[in-house]
Image (tube, rainbow, N blue to C red; front, top):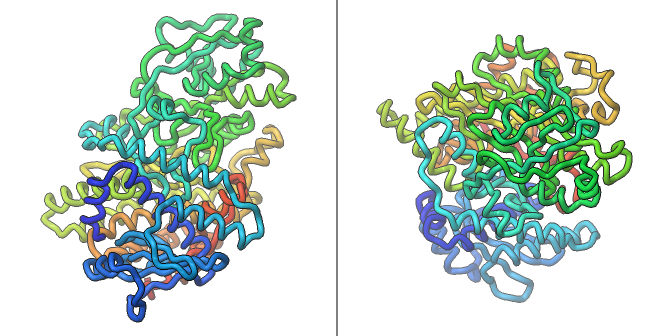
Length: 607
């Protein structure tokens, strides 16, 4: 299927078929990148000499001019077959036909996502001599069901006004991470919960408030106001804090979960907590599901949510609350220099938090209550910026499969018409402006300050001025780390040992995270999405990345930067996070492994 045929498929097939097709694609993406590619179990080429290959595949190749991808599963002897546009060093294949599989001694048969998931997980279990991972299979099932529910709802047109366009981008991620085995999984949500709380279904809802007796109130703030004052200022008119109680908003799903916990029920019976129920205006769920937005509130509320969303259960442990505050202290120290160097960079700080201390946080129930109520206040979008700049979630354009492609092409078409220039020329200039906004400040924070941001597609807001990239927002301090031995902006001696332990990475860990999020999760996907406009664009866009890396060295380079970046320019592999393998082994995100991904820069000669 070419680009237009692919768009037609996703517009005309049932939501269930679309969800199943995308699951096939993402599962194979993961397996090719993490297992089959490194093991040399993929062949891509013409169809000669293979008389038994399915006629539908032959027809697809004849129509699209693509190539056949053949994969061997070594332990089962199963063979997988699909037409792709061309070979891809980064694994960003465009699939052009139905998928097929062949068991030993049997004919080729159509392949659905259930069969593929079972085959891959069974083969991985045999390769690694471990039990079949039933939990991951269930996460894949859940992801397909969630995606089907989302895709059943038509995608609205992108609004024109700034804040509506921003919110639409947060709520538009119908497909999710293109290299994750279960990108839409959220275990803990029922079908009814999904309808109430899924951002992709345009969810909005009032917050559920609790009143916390002040001897059990946990808070910290770097702002002139205390956290309880900040929360009280945004509370509904009918709710008021007083000398005895502070107000604490929660996500309504989380409130239901908390009210089922014995320690919380006892605290309510003893009047240490009061359940005030749903109150006030509707807040909007953003792409992370648990971070909530209201245009009149100067802060986002990052709530705890006892739901496994892709890799992790999304709760705010006390050390994570304090860690966000420590990172904000650090950013406030280095920000004057960063702002002077990078005029269009914005960083959304997390300067306050709140939770409860129903006991001494010494036993499991106390810790779970503190985690369950944990709330982080994240700085909102500055009205001075949004008066002229439209912030869009990067993932809504680059990580959202056909829907992102369609919106990206709309932007390119408008610009091409304004400039009377070919779309591919506009795409080069546009991508260059995007890379120039994002790459230098992220690398500078790492190489000059020892600060590791995670600029993946859900942590980056791209600011457009008349459709051109003009600003960048970085967010989510949970993922921000500090490099051991190189970070020296402020002393962290007063922070608890658990907080310090969670904040620091080795230099190699930090580089792997930066390079993965920036080059693989972000730029690989941006290049893949833009390259649908013209076959030659992929190499031309990677030349832009190479040029911007050289330019960074010329303007900001130091010996550590020169060592890392010159290796990239010489063709060193990119570190790619192994999402399938990590979920297969049930590893926590901090212990995620990275695999060497062949660099697209290696094929460009002297860039």
